Length: 136
Image (tube, rainbow, N blue to C red; front, side):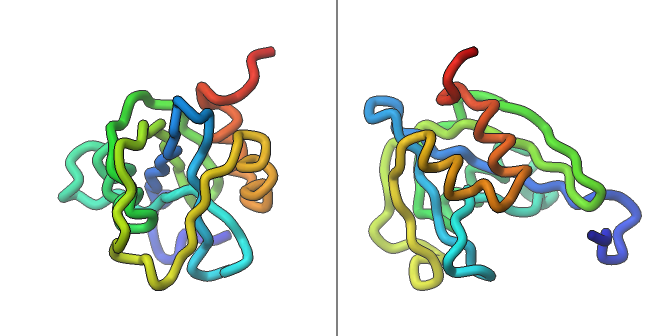
């Protein structure tokens, strides 16, 4: 993959929306690939100030998720992108949200979430480092 004219990799912030009581992860469909599932993620913007603010903003825009970022999970680098992962404990889901006409969302257990997002290696890797992952 290329950097699309950037001199450094794109900075992407990713939320892992969690319902701790249910032990579930909220996954959403990709806009580009409607039959593929992803975690809410997007580019960091200078107005976000902190990386975790970008993850929270993306979760609201893409999945209608409101909650609290509870922990930093990991940073994963690829040639074109640096991904920063944060766990987000979900408090509410908006009925209508910015991208509600373009995406579906679904609560699934950890293993199903990993299965659904495994087409995107970095996302699966980030989720597998979260607190929901079985301990070895």
